[in-house]
Amino acid sequence: MPVRQAGSDQEAGVNHHIPVNYDQLPGHMRESTRAYIETGRPVGDFLTAVLQNNLMEAFRRADDKNRAAMPEWVCFLHNEAPADCYGSRQAVKAWRERGGMNGKAGAA
Image (cartoon, rainbow, N blue to C red; front, top):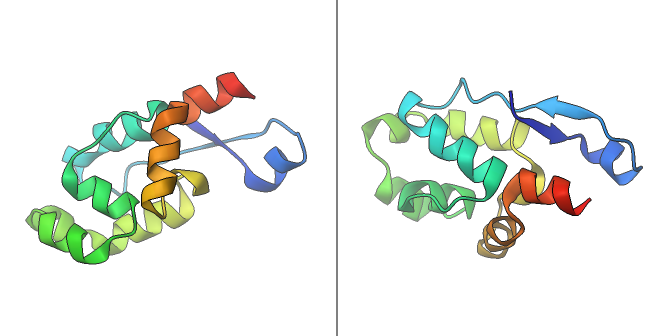
């Protein structure tokens, strides 16, 4: 199972891992979300908008399942995703450039 660094432990230099749980996301979105978080792989327009915190664009691009799951997307990002992988265009660009968690772990 993929893991992410615990924020306060990471800052303190302690290497504790917390699993990322993708179960609350629509099934057809789990693999692309996992690949983005782990490797920084580019994703489609809907998920890019969600990750960039672009609510209007996310709703415009969402299929019916993702539109209904917007509360789950918010909870997933807040509770499961690494905080530095989303939130703005710059954050998403930087996450992709570093290669996601795999690239981040290699750089640490």
